[in-house]
Amino acid sequence: MKAVGFAGFSGSGKTTLVETLIPALKLRGLRVSVVKHAHHKFDIDHPGKDTYRHREAGAFEVVVASDKRLALMREFEQAAELSVHQLIAELWEGVDWVLVEGFKQSNLLKIEVWRAAAKKPARYPDDDFIAAIATDTPAQLPEPTLRPVLDLNDPDAIAQWLVDNGERFEYDPDRYQ
Image 1 (tube, rainbow, N blue to C red):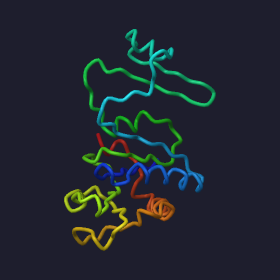
Image 2 (cartoon, rainbow, N blue to C red):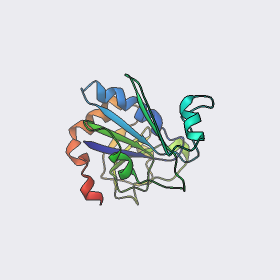
Image 3 (tube, rainbow, N blue to C red):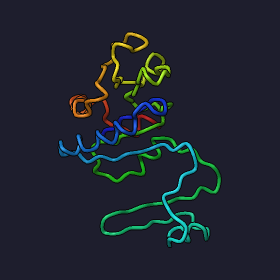
Image 4 (cartoon, one colour):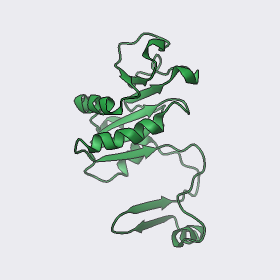
């Protein structure tokens, strides 16, 4: 399995890039999973549904499955900030690529998504885990870099760059212990 993170400030285009990379990688015959960091309380369940009622009754975990889908909901009794590596460990075996959105402080290799229009600082000058920069304004990067600069508006080329450089992104959980 290979894993790559996508880091950047809110509004930089991380979600759109990940969303377009999924089909680009799938067209190459690859199975893709996504790990997404949420900053706020979120819910994938709704009042009135059986699974919601089970959680409200106090279940620690609820798994709901059909012949098309599986969802696991886990209620932490105390706040718990799981690492990206703990979340990757939860994924099904047989995945070719894990695209990680968020977790910008992690020690996972990442592509920084940077837009000059956002008027936010770049992370790559201070983050050794940035493997490449995806941008729509390469001439406006705040500092020169030897890292690859990828066209944010060409997800197919970014997917091909990932495939061509896949050995760099091979995930070894023992490396992060």
